[in-house]
Image 1 (cartoon, rainbow, N blue to C red):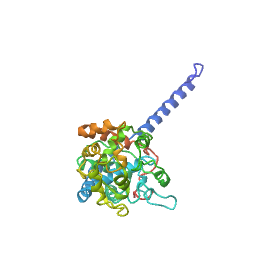
Image 2: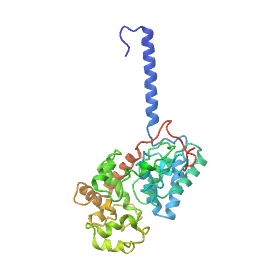
Image 3: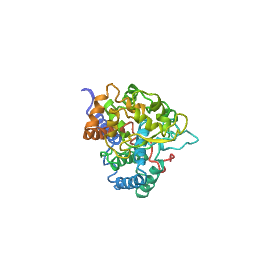
Image 4: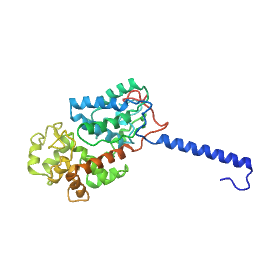
Length: 327
């Protein structure tokens, strides 16, 4: 504030500058906020366009729905929801696709390419790849029978990617302890409750033998008949890429059977079963196994929170023309 001894003109200047500064701050904060109606005027058909492509691709292969959901998770956990996971290697940087958690594991890049191509025809240079990934994750969930939510939009795309960050353990591995899971999610602003709800995405999708071999042969907190069934398609020393459903009951339906499986020690991954193993998250697993409405509601809320992780907004980043490379 100007002092009482300031002249009228200097007061006027101070007030005007102050008003301008406040307006700049407000404009900046508005630009930095994601919004569910971000493309209402600039690209009104973006949601229906994304949904159409996702619906077609998931009808061809139900597993693709799980893959698109996972793509969003692996994007957001490495330097925020910025589409960096979509970037191919360049001379200036190595992308995240070959990182341990992603290599021969994350899928759906071609589907994002198809969506981007159609959206660019409608609204050139308007919709980010990061937002397309977020919308596709929601649509996949709904198509497979899960909850709906309004996706907050307005993210911009990164101009680079980080192989080292993707390899740093920031994405919790399937060998994670419960404490590691809780801490990794907490580092991203997500609670233990969010973590348990988001783990419910394992109600769909499949995992490779190499990821769960140790669990089905060496761990004790696993149902014997379940372990033997999985061993039939996952030998001790071969078949690394053989697949098994994460939820053996309803592998292509988004429901709460994942949690029911955990109660019976039929979690496929080590990081699944630690959620129900005599520790702090047992009660949440029980709750979700009994009440699908609670699970669906908490999952949707957690997805919205995850989508808020460190987005690029305003003048940061760019709107890529091709999701695989910077402009």
